[in-house]
Image (cartoon, rainbow, N blue to C red; front, side, top):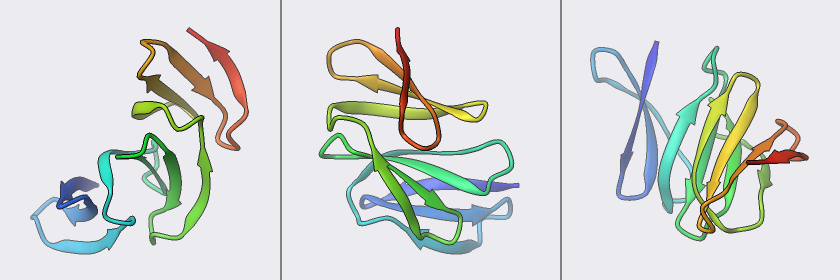
Length: 100
């Protein structure tokens, strides 16, 4: 199992013993979360974008409307908290399932 840590806006993937595996992202991350099998990382940026990246750091896609404050994996879907106080549940491909 790996651990995510944010330092200076960069997302660091670390082993349980603390050793650095790699650094991913563009340097503007405010939160990050692994999916269940730790193959994908969802990153919330300062600008409110949500990025889905592979564990090697390559960008798969950006999703959302640019108003995200936090994003977490919810099974195979992503729960995005917005600055309007709502939560969007989105598929991995970015399509909106529902707003809570």
